Length: 247
Length: 234
Image (tube, rainbow over all chains, first blue to last red):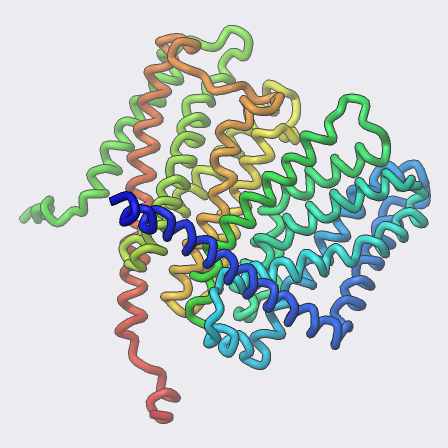
Protein backbone atom coordinates (compact mmCIF):
# COMPACT_ATOMS: atom_id res chain seq x y z
CA UNK A 1 0.00 0.00 0.00
CA UNK A 2 2.80 2.32 0.97
CA UNK A 3 4.44 1.63 -2.39
CA UNK A 4 1.26 2.77 -4.12
CA UNK A 5 0.84 5.95 -2.11
CA UNK A 6 4.49 7.04 -2.24
CA UNK A 7 4.48 8.27 -5.86
CA UNK A 8 1.26 10.25 -5.38
CA UNK A 9 2.84 12.03 -2.46
CA UNK A 10 6.06 12.88 -4.22
CA UNK A 11 4.84 13.49 -7.76
CA UNK A 12 3.35 16.96 -7.18
CA UNK A 13 6.62 18.02 -5.58
CA UNK A 14 8.53 16.57 -8.52
CA UNK A 15 6.20 18.23 -11.00
CA UNK A 16 6.65 21.53 -9.20
CA UNK A 17 10.42 21.18 -9.26
CA UNK A 18 10.26 20.36 -12.98
CA UNK A 19 8.01 23.36 -13.62
CA UNK A 20 10.36 25.67 -11.74
CA UNK A 21 13.33 24.30 -13.71
CA UNK A 22 11.53 24.92 -17.01
CA UNK A 23 10.46 28.38 -15.85
CA UNK A 24 14.01 29.27 -14.87
CA UNK A 25 15.31 28.03 -18.24
CA UNK A 26 12.73 30.07 -20.15
CA UNK A 27 13.47 33.14 -18.01
CA UNK A 28 17.17 32.89 -18.82
CA UNK A 29 16.35 32.54 -22.53
CA UNK A 30 14.19 35.68 -22.52
CA UNK A 31 16.86 37.52 -20.54
CA UNK A 32 19.58 36.44 -22.99
CA UNK A 33 17.44 37.62 -25.92
CA UNK A 34 16.95 41.05 -24.33
CA UNK A 35 20.62 41.43 -23.37
CA UNK A 36 21.69 40.38 -26.87
CA UNK A 37 19.36 42.94 -28.46
CA UNK A 38 20.69 45.56 -26.08
CA UNK A 39 24.29 44.69 -26.84
CA UNK A 40 23.65 44.88 -30.59
CA UNK A 41 21.94 48.27 -30.31
CA UNK A 42 23.63 49.86 -27.30
CA UNK A 43 21.88 53.13 -28.16
CA UNK A 44 19.30 52.72 -25.37
CA UNK A 45 21.96 52.35 -22.69
CA UNK A 46 23.91 55.34 -23.93
CA UNK A 47 20.86 57.60 -24.24
CA UNK A 48 19.48 56.63 -20.81
CA UNK A 49 22.92 57.12 -19.24
CA UNK A 50 23.19 60.54 -20.85
CA UNK A 51 19.73 61.40 -19.54
CA UNK A 52 20.83 60.41 -16.02
CA UNK A 53 23.93 62.60 -16.29
CA UNK A 54 21.88 65.58 -17.49
CA UNK A 55 19.50 65.06 -14.56
CA UNK A 56 22.38 65.05 -12.06
CA UNK A 57 23.75 68.25 -13.59
CA UNK A 58 20.30 69.88 -13.46
CA UNK A 59 19.95 69.13 -9.75
CA UNK A 60 23.26 70.86 -9.06
CA UNK A 61 22.12 73.90 -11.08
CA UNK A 62 18.81 73.98 -9.18
CA UNK A 63 20.43 73.77 -5.73
CA UNK A 64 23.30 76.13 -6.51
CA UNK A 65 27.07 75.85 -6.23
CA UNK A 66 27.21 75.47 -2.42
CA UNK A 67 28.98 72.12 -1.99
CA UNK A 68 27.55 71.57 1.52
CA UNK A 69 24.00 71.71 0.15
CA UNK A 70 24.91 69.46 -2.76
CA UNK A 71 26.57 66.94 -0.48
CA UNK A 72 23.54 66.91 1.83
CA UNK A 73 21.19 66.10 -1.05
CA UNK A 74 23.55 63.78 -2.97
CA UNK A 75 21.73 60.53 -2.15
CA UNK A 76 18.36 62.04 -3.11
CA UNK A 77 19.71 63.37 -6.41
CA UNK A 78 21.27 60.00 -7.23
CA UNK A 79 18.09 58.03 -6.61
CA UNK A 80 15.98 60.60 -8.45
CA UNK A 81 18.33 60.35 -11.44
CA UNK A 82 17.86 56.56 -11.31
CA UNK A 83 14.07 56.90 -11.03
CA UNK A 84 13.75 59.35 -13.92
CA UNK A 85 16.09 57.29 -16.10
CA UNK A 86 14.15 54.13 -15.28
CA UNK A 87 10.96 55.43 -16.93
CA UNK A 88 12.84 55.87 -20.21
CA UNK A 89 14.46 52.45 -19.94
CA UNK A 90 11.26 50.65 -18.98
CA UNK A 91 9.05 52.12 -21.69
CA UNK A 92 11.75 51.46 -24.27
CA UNK A 93 12.02 47.78 -23.25
CA UNK A 94 8.48 47.03 -24.46
CA UNK A 95 8.36 49.52 -27.33
CA UNK A 96 10.75 47.30 -29.28
CA UNK A 97 8.49 44.28 -28.73
CA UNK A 98 5.41 46.09 -29.99
CA UNK A 99 7.10 47.93 -32.85
CA UNK A 100 7.63 44.82 -34.95
CA UNK A 101 4.77 42.94 -33.23
CA UNK A 102 7.47 40.71 -31.80
CA UNK A 103 5.45 40.20 -28.62
CA UNK A 104 2.88 38.22 -30.63
CA UNK A 105 5.63 35.88 -31.82
CA UNK A 106 6.94 35.58 -28.29
CA UNK A 107 3.48 34.65 -26.98
CA UNK A 108 2.97 32.08 -29.73
CA UNK A 109 6.05 30.21 -28.50
CA UNK A 110 5.55 27.64 -25.74
CA UNK A 111 6.89 30.08 -23.17
CA UNK A 112 5.20 30.73 -19.85
CA UNK A 113 4.18 34.44 -19.59
CA UNK A 114 5.67 34.45 -16.10
CA UNK A 115 9.06 33.59 -17.64
CA UNK A 116 8.67 36.51 -20.06
CA UNK A 117 7.97 38.79 -17.10
CA UNK A 118 10.93 37.62 -15.04
CA UNK A 119 13.24 37.69 -18.05
CA UNK A 120 12.21 41.24 -18.91
CA UNK A 121 12.26 42.43 -15.27
CA UNK A 122 15.73 40.94 -14.75
CA UNK A 123 16.90 42.56 -17.96
CA UNK A 124 15.59 45.94 -16.79
CA UNK A 125 17.23 45.49 -13.38
CA UNK A 126 20.59 44.70 -14.98
CA UNK A 127 20.15 47.65 -17.32
CA UNK A 128 19.51 50.03 -14.41
CA UNK A 129 22.44 48.54 -12.47
CA UNK A 130 24.72 49.37 -15.41
CA UNK A 131 23.95 53.05 -14.82
CA UNK A 132 25.37 52.87 -11.27
CA UNK A 133 29.14 53.17 -11.93
CA UNK A 134 28.79 56.18 -14.21
CA UNK A 135 26.14 58.06 -12.20
CA UNK A 136 27.92 57.44 -8.90
CA UNK A 137 31.22 58.63 -10.29
CA UNK A 138 29.62 61.79 -11.67
CA UNK A 139 27.84 62.36 -8.32
CA UNK A 140 31.21 62.07 -6.55
CA UNK A 141 32.64 64.74 -8.83
CA UNK A 142 29.68 67.13 -8.97
CA UNK A 143 28.52 66.88 -5.35
CA UNK A 144 31.94 66.58 -3.72
CA UNK A 145 31.20 63.27 -1.96
CA UNK A 146 33.84 60.63 -1.42
CA UNK A 147 33.31 56.89 -1.22
CA UNK A 148 35.69 54.41 0.36
CA UNK A 149 35.77 50.83 -0.97
CA UNK A 150 33.34 49.54 1.67
CA UNK A 151 31.00 52.51 1.17
CA UNK A 152 31.04 51.87 -2.56
CA UNK A 153 30.13 48.20 -2.09
CA UNK A 154 27.24 49.14 0.22
CA UNK A 155 26.06 51.83 -2.20
CA UNK A 156 26.12 49.33 -5.07
CA UNK A 157 24.12 46.83 -3.00
CA UNK A 158 21.49 49.48 -2.25
CA UNK A 159 21.46 50.50 -5.92
CA UNK A 160 20.70 46.88 -6.90
CA UNK A 161 17.82 46.75 -4.39
CA UNK A 162 16.44 50.07 -5.67
CA UNK A 163 16.79 49.00 -9.32
CA UNK A 164 14.99 45.73 -8.58
CA UNK A 165 12.23 47.66 -6.78
CA UNK A 166 11.74 49.95 -9.77
CA UNK A 167 11.87 47.14 -12.32
CA UNK A 168 9.28 44.85 -10.72
CA UNK A 169 6.17 47.07 -11.01
CA UNK A 170 7.80 49.08 -13.83
CA UNK A 171 8.01 46.07 -16.15
CA UNK A 172 4.35 45.18 -15.51
CA UNK A 173 3.15 48.75 -16.11
CA UNK A 174 5.44 49.19 -19.13
CA UNK A 175 3.91 46.05 -20.69
CA UNK A 176 0.45 47.57 -20.26
CA UNK A 177 1.10 51.19 -21.18
CA UNK A 178 3.43 50.49 -24.12
CA UNK A 179 0.35 49.78 -26.24
CA UNK A 180 -1.30 53.09 -25.41
CA UNK A 181 -0.85 56.39 -27.16
CA UNK A 182 -0.34 58.25 -23.90
CA UNK A 183 2.35 55.90 -22.60
CA UNK A 184 4.75 58.73 -21.78
CA UNK A 185 2.25 60.24 -19.36
CA UNK A 186 0.76 57.07 -17.92
CA UNK A 187 3.88 55.12 -16.99
CA UNK A 188 5.26 57.78 -14.61
CA UNK A 189 1.74 58.50 -13.34
CA UNK A 190 1.28 54.87 -12.32
CA UNK A 191 4.85 54.10 -11.33
CA UNK A 192 6.00 57.14 -9.33
CA UNK A 193 3.47 56.96 -6.46
CA UNK A 194 3.97 53.20 -6.24
CA UNK A 195 7.75 53.39 -5.87
CA UNK A 196 7.78 56.12 -3.22
CA UNK A 197 8.84 53.50 -0.60
CA UNK A 198 11.80 52.61 -2.85
CA UNK A 199 12.71 56.27 -3.17
CA UNK A 200 12.43 56.88 0.58
CA UNK A 201 14.24 53.71 1.58
CA UNK A 202 17.13 54.00 -0.84
CA UNK A 203 17.68 57.73 -0.25
CA UNK A 204 17.71 57.26 3.51
CA UNK A 205 19.91 54.16 3.36
CA UNK A 206 22.42 55.75 0.94
CA UNK A 207 22.51 58.85 3.11
CA UNK A 208 23.35 56.70 6.14
CA UNK A 209 26.08 54.93 4.18
CA UNK A 210 27.64 58.23 3.06
CA UNK A 211 27.31 60.24 6.27
CA UNK A 212 27.51 57.56 8.97
CA UNK A 213 24.98 55.43 10.83
CA UNK A 214 25.24 56.15 14.57
CA UNK A 215 21.74 54.78 15.35
CA UNK A 216 22.17 51.55 13.28
CA UNK A 217 19.21 52.32 11.03
CA UNK A 218 20.76 51.06 7.80
CA UNK A 219 19.61 47.49 8.34
CA UNK A 220 15.93 48.42 8.79
CA UNK A 221 15.88 50.67 5.68
CA UNK A 222 17.59 47.96 3.64
CA UNK A 223 15.08 45.40 4.92
CA UNK A 224 12.23 47.69 3.88
CA UNK A 225 13.68 47.83 0.36
CA UNK A 226 14.08 44.07 0.34
CA UNK A 227 10.48 43.56 1.53
CA UNK A 228 9.21 45.85 -1.24
CA UNK A 229 11.21 43.86 -3.80
CA UNK A 230 9.92 40.49 -2.54
CA UNK A 231 6.27 41.67 -2.50
CA UNK A 232 6.30 43.23 -5.97
CA UNK A 233 8.47 40.60 -7.69
CA UNK A 234 6.00 37.95 -6.51
CA UNK A 235 2.78 39.91 -7.11
CA UNK A 236 3.68 41.30 -10.54
CA UNK A 237 4.93 37.88 -11.68
CA UNK A 238 1.48 36.45 -10.96
CA UNK A 239 -0.39 39.36 -12.58
CA UNK A 240 1.72 39.67 -15.73
CA UNK A 241 0.00 36.86 -17.62
CA UNK A 242 -3.32 38.73 -17.36
CA UNK A 243 -1.69 41.93 -18.64
CA UNK A 244 -0.49 40.41 -21.89
CA UNK A 245 -3.15 37.77 -22.48
CA UNK A 246 -4.63 39.74 -25.37
CA UNK A 247 -1.81 41.39 -27.33
CA UNK B 1 -54.74 66.54 -10.34
CA UNK B 2 -51.72 65.51 -8.31
CA UNK B 3 -49.44 62.91 -9.86
CA UNK B 4 -48.45 59.97 -7.64
CA UNK B 5 -44.77 59.21 -7.14
CA UNK B 6 -44.04 55.67 -8.44
CA UNK B 7 -42.30 54.50 -5.25
CA UNK B 8 -41.71 50.99 -6.57
CA UNK B 9 -39.64 52.34 -9.44
CA UNK B 10 -37.16 54.09 -7.17
CA UNK B 11 -33.87 52.16 -7.12
CA UNK B 12 -32.81 50.56 -3.84
CA UNK B 13 -29.67 52.71 -3.63
CA UNK B 14 -31.77 55.89 -3.43
CA UNK B 15 -33.46 54.53 -0.31
CA UNK B 16 -30.01 53.77 1.08
CA UNK B 17 -28.90 57.33 0.28
CA UNK B 18 -32.03 58.75 1.92
CA UNK B 19 -31.30 56.84 5.12
CA UNK B 20 -27.65 57.92 4.92
CA UNK B 21 -28.55 61.61 4.53
CA UNK B 22 -31.02 61.49 7.43
CA UNK B 23 -28.45 59.78 9.64
CA UNK B 24 -25.77 62.27 8.59
CA UNK B 25 -28.02 65.20 9.55
CA UNK B 26 -28.80 63.72 12.97
CA UNK B 27 -25.20 62.63 13.56
CA UNK B 28 -23.82 66.04 12.58
CA UNK B 29 -26.37 67.79 14.83
CA UNK B 30 -25.39 65.58 17.78
CA UNK B 31 -21.69 66.06 16.98
CA UNK B 32 -21.96 69.84 16.74
CA UNK B 33 -24.47 70.68 19.47
CA UNK B 34 -24.85 67.75 21.89
CA UNK B 35 -21.38 66.17 22.23
CA UNK B 36 -19.01 68.05 24.56
CA UNK B 37 -15.93 69.85 23.20
CA UNK B 38 -12.58 68.11 23.65
CA UNK B 39 -10.65 69.30 26.70
CA UNK B 40 -7.45 70.42 24.90
CA UNK B 41 -8.49 71.03 21.29
CA UNK B 42 -11.88 72.53 21.99
CA UNK B 43 -14.44 72.74 19.20
CA UNK B 44 -11.95 71.99 16.43
CA UNK B 45 -12.03 68.32 17.53
CA UNK B 46 -15.58 68.10 16.15
CA UNK B 47 -14.04 67.66 12.70
CA UNK B 48 -13.39 64.09 13.90
CA UNK B 49 -17.07 63.29 13.24
CA UNK B 50 -16.49 63.58 9.49
CA UNK B 51 -12.74 62.91 9.32
CA UNK B 52 -12.73 59.45 10.89
CA UNK B 53 -15.80 58.21 8.94
CA UNK B 54 -14.11 59.37 5.71
CA UNK B 55 -11.00 57.37 6.62
CA UNK B 56 -12.84 54.18 7.64
CA UNK B 57 -15.11 54.15 4.62
CA UNK B 58 -12.38 55.15 2.19
CA UNK B 59 -10.30 52.16 3.29
CA UNK B 60 -13.41 49.97 3.13
CA UNK B 61 -14.13 51.09 -0.45
CA UNK B 62 -10.56 50.33 -1.56
CA UNK B 63 -10.78 46.92 0.11
CA UNK B 64 -14.05 46.23 -1.70
CA UNK B 65 -12.44 47.31 -4.98
CA UNK B 66 -9.52 44.95 -4.30
CA UNK B 67 -11.88 42.01 -3.74
CA UNK B 68 -13.84 42.94 -6.88
CA UNK B 69 -10.56 43.16 -8.84
CA UNK B 70 -9.62 39.60 -7.85
CA UNK B 71 -13.09 38.38 -8.89
CA UNK B 72 -12.77 40.31 -12.18
CA UNK B 73 -9.50 38.54 -13.02
CA UNK B 74 -11.12 35.25 -12.08
CA UNK B 75 -14.43 35.65 -13.93
CA UNK B 76 -14.15 38.69 -16.29
CA UNK B 77 -17.78 39.56 -15.55
CA UNK B 78 -18.80 43.17 -16.37
CA UNK B 79 -20.88 43.37 -13.19
CA UNK B 80 -17.79 43.02 -11.01
CA UNK B 81 -15.87 45.44 -13.18
CA UNK B 82 -18.62 48.03 -12.67
CA UNK B 83 -18.61 47.35 -8.92
CA UNK B 84 -14.82 47.73 -8.84
CA UNK B 85 -14.95 51.10 -10.63
CA UNK B 86 -17.74 52.34 -8.36
CA UNK B 87 -15.79 51.45 -5.24
CA UNK B 88 -12.51 52.91 -6.54
CA UNK B 89 -14.18 56.23 -7.31
CA UNK B 90 -16.06 56.32 -3.99
CA UNK B 91 -12.73 55.55 -2.28
CA UNK B 92 -10.95 58.36 -4.15
CA UNK B 93 -13.65 60.90 -3.20
CA UNK B 94 -13.48 59.86 0.47
CA UNK B 95 -9.68 59.85 0.38
CA UNK B 96 -9.60 63.40 -1.01
CA UNK B 97 -12.10 64.51 1.67
CA UNK B 98 -9.95 62.81 4.30
CA UNK B 99 -6.86 64.76 3.28
CA UNK B 100 -8.69 68.10 3.13
CA UNK B 101 -10.35 67.59 6.53
CA UNK B 102 -7.06 66.35 8.02
CA UNK B 103 -5.26 69.39 6.67
CA UNK B 104 -7.77 71.77 8.28
CA UNK B 105 -7.48 69.89 11.58
CA UNK B 106 -3.68 69.90 11.35
CA UNK B 107 -3.60 73.67 10.82
CA UNK B 108 -5.65 74.22 13.97
CA UNK B 109 -3.81 71.72 16.18
CA UNK B 110 -0.27 71.33 14.80
CA UNK B 111 -0.02 74.84 13.29
CA UNK B 112 0.71 73.61 9.76
CA UNK B 113 -1.49 72.59 6.84
CA UNK B 114 0.69 69.60 6.04
CA UNK B 115 3.36 67.50 7.71
CA UNK B 116 5.39 64.68 6.13
CA UNK B 117 4.21 62.33 8.83
CA UNK B 118 3.98 58.65 7.89
CA UNK B 119 0.15 58.49 8.11
CA UNK B 120 -0.32 61.63 6.03
CA UNK B 121 2.26 60.53 3.46
CA UNK B 122 0.83 57.04 2.99
CA UNK B 123 -2.70 58.50 2.69
CA UNK B 124 -1.53 60.91 -0.01
CA UNK B 125 0.27 58.09 -1.82
CA UNK B 126 -2.95 56.03 -1.64
CA UNK B 127 -4.89 58.84 -3.31
CA UNK B 128 -2.27 59.25 -6.04
CA UNK B 129 -2.19 55.49 -6.66
CA UNK B 130 -5.93 55.12 -7.16
CA UNK B 131 -6.16 58.37 -9.14
CA UNK B 132 -3.54 56.77 -11.40
CA UNK B 133 -5.75 53.67 -11.75
CA UNK B 134 -8.63 55.91 -12.86
CA UNK B 135 -6.34 57.69 -15.34
CA UNK B 136 -5.20 54.36 -16.77
CA UNK B 137 -8.81 53.29 -17.19
CA UNK B 138 -9.73 56.45 -19.06
CA UNK B 139 -6.96 55.89 -21.61
CA UNK B 140 -7.83 52.29 -22.57
CA UNK B 141 -10.45 52.02 -25.31
CA UNK B 142 -10.96 48.26 -25.54
CA UNK B 143 -13.54 47.22 -22.90
CA UNK B 144 -12.04 43.83 -21.99
CA UNK B 145 -8.53 45.17 -21.77
CA UNK B 146 -9.78 48.12 -19.69
CA UNK B 147 -11.40 45.71 -17.25
CA UNK B 148 -8.32 43.51 -16.86
CA UNK B 149 -5.83 46.34 -16.59
CA UNK B 150 -7.92 48.24 -14.05
CA UNK B 151 -8.11 45.07 -11.95
CA UNK B 152 -4.33 44.57 -12.17
CA UNK B 153 -3.55 48.18 -11.25
CA UNK B 154 -6.06 48.01 -8.37
CA UNK B 155 -4.41 44.89 -6.92
CA UNK B 156 -0.94 46.42 -7.26
CA UNK B 157 -2.07 49.69 -5.66
CA UNK B 158 -3.91 47.99 -2.80
CA UNK B 159 -0.61 47.03 -1.14
CA UNK B 160 -0.52 50.58 0.26
CA UNK B 161 -3.91 50.27 2.02
CA UNK B 162 -2.86 48.04 4.97
CA UNK B 163 0.20 50.26 5.29
CA UNK B 164 -2.05 53.33 5.80
CA UNK B 165 -3.94 51.56 8.57
CA UNK B 166 -1.01 50.03 10.45
CA UNK B 167 1.68 52.70 9.89
CA UNK B 168 0.83 54.58 13.09
CA UNK B 169 1.54 51.41 15.08
CA UNK B 170 4.65 50.36 13.15
CA UNK B 171 6.40 53.75 13.03
CA UNK B 172 6.61 56.75 15.32
CA UNK B 173 3.97 59.15 14.06
CA UNK B 174 2.67 62.62 14.81
CA UNK B 175 -0.78 61.27 13.98
CA UNK B 176 -2.47 59.49 16.85
CA UNK B 177 -3.01 55.72 16.87
CA UNK B 178 -6.50 54.28 16.32
CA UNK B 179 -8.98 55.10 19.08
CA UNK B 180 -11.33 52.56 20.61
CA UNK B 181 -14.70 53.08 22.38
CA UNK B 182 -12.74 52.63 25.64
CA UNK B 183 -10.48 55.60 24.89
CA UNK B 184 -13.23 57.94 23.64
CA UNK B 185 -15.99 59.49 25.75
CA UNK B 186 -19.40 57.83 25.23
CA UNK B 187 -20.96 61.17 24.25
CA UNK B 188 -18.43 61.40 21.42
CA UNK B 189 -18.75 57.77 20.30
CA UNK B 190 -22.45 58.12 19.42
CA UNK B 191 -22.16 60.87 16.74
CA UNK B 192 -18.98 59.24 15.44
CA UNK B 193 -20.76 55.92 14.89
CA UNK B 194 -23.85 57.60 13.41
CA UNK B 195 -21.76 59.50 10.89
CA UNK B 196 -19.67 56.41 10.12
CA UNK B 197 -22.81 54.48 9.17
CA UNK B 198 -24.15 57.53 7.26
CA UNK B 199 -20.90 57.80 5.25
CA UNK B 200 -21.04 54.07 4.56
CA UNK B 201 -24.61 54.31 3.23
CA UNK B 202 -23.71 57.32 1.07
CA UNK B 203 -20.61 55.52 -0.24
CA UNK B 204 -22.78 52.53 -1.15
CA UNK B 205 -25.14 54.88 -3.01
CA UNK B 206 -22.24 56.53 -4.87
CA UNK B 207 -20.60 53.22 -5.81
CA UNK B 208 -23.91 51.69 -6.92
CA UNK B 209 -24.82 54.70 -9.10
CA UNK B 210 -21.35 54.71 -10.64
CA UNK B 211 -21.58 50.95 -11.27
CA UNK B 212 -24.96 51.39 -13.01
CA UNK B 213 -23.48 54.17 -15.15
CA UNK B 214 -20.53 51.96 -16.06
CA UNK B 215 -22.82 49.11 -17.12
CA UNK B 216 -24.95 51.53 -19.17
CA UNK B 217 -21.84 52.90 -20.90
CA UNK B 218 -20.71 49.37 -21.70
CA UNK B 219 -24.13 48.50 -23.16
CA UNK B 220 -24.05 51.68 -25.23
CA UNK B 221 -20.63 50.76 -26.62
CA UNK B 222 -21.81 47.26 -27.47
CA UNK B 223 -24.84 48.42 -29.46
CA UNK B 224 -23.24 51.58 -30.89
CA UNK B 225 -23.98 52.21 -34.55
CA UNK B 226 -20.74 51.86 -36.56
CA UNK B 227 -19.33 55.05 -37.95
CA UNK B 228 -20.03 55.86 -41.60
CA UNK B 229 -16.41 55.25 -42.52
CA UNK B 230 -16.56 51.72 -41.07
CA UNK B 231 -19.82 50.97 -42.94
CA UNK B 232 -18.33 52.12 -46.25
CA UNK B 233 -15.25 50.04 -45.59
CA UNK B 234 -17.41 46.96 -44.85
